[in-house]
Length: 351
Ligand SMILES: *Cc1c(COP(=O)(O)O)cnc(C)c1O
Ligand code: SF4
Image 1 (cartoon, rainbow, N blue to C red):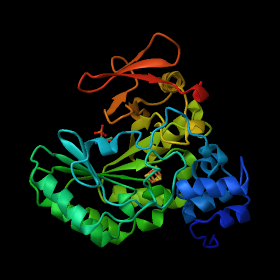
Image 2 (tube, protein in one colour):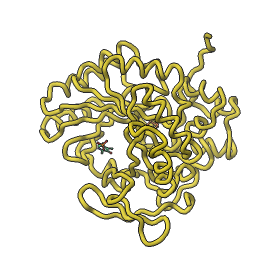
Image 3 (tube, rainbow, N blue to C red):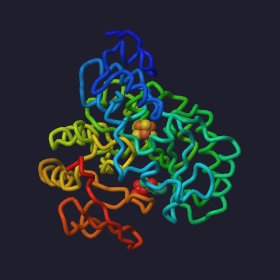
Image 4 (spheres, helix red, strand yellow):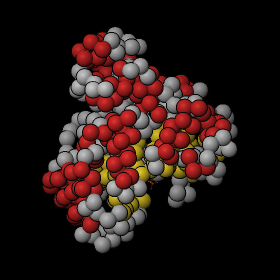
């Protein structure tokens, strides 16, 4: 059945018109969106309109974002701690992440890069050239991860240019794109974009999706087009209180991924981004969910539950020996991949 064509929602006035002002006044919400960008893609606007609250909470701003806990950070995973050139983070020897744009088709309210996404557009030509020069001159780099923002919001021609440049570097065996586009803006996955992805011989996509309700008919078709093109698909999901912190909700999401030929890769503990404490679960809560899924669903459906150690020390599985319970409840000792030890405490509000 043809549907009325909606456009992306980008203003507080549009939120008011949709009656999506919750948990605070319009004044509060205006305050929130001056700090953290607002955008809800047409596809997600339509999906929220059909009444699913797992989606509303992810995309509609809330006055709760004005609460900033003392443990929350402006750069929670330390991207800027390992940035040899603008836009490029080189934390692990064999792989880098390259933020090719600050734009996304949605601005998720829990985003770990919420201080920078939506604040600018494309990485400038000079910065991109400098990043490519750095990669070209660093033979240890085996894999380049395009991120942002969302790299799949790039025009196909621009994406092709970047992939062609990387394809000319013999040591860059793999290119990975981390993207929410196939679910939030599936119309972008057209033949021009798919052809552009063919410009490097080994492109992998890691889809960010948190709730089965995001996997609309259009999203499922877009993922079908990507897998038909032979592109391997993985997923990453952020564990979010009130959205997917429930074994049945996660089981449904992970099973849906497998049907769409998307292999669940990571379940992320919610990072300490400013104004996101209402989304954070406890570490013990996340471990209990993973334990509840073990055995109940196929082993192929289970991602690794990981935490990004605050400050830029990398991601580790939330399991022994990387994460061990500390002396009191909610306190943990985290061991990074180099053996460094870090204290982590569940924020008060999460307990
Ligand atoms: C997450 C991340 C990666 C990728 O890590 P994998 O465990 O290989 O998925 C690489 N570099 C940085 C800086 C990251 O934050
Ligand atoms: S799509 Fe990704 S980078 Fe963009 S706002 Fe959402 S979580 Fe952040």
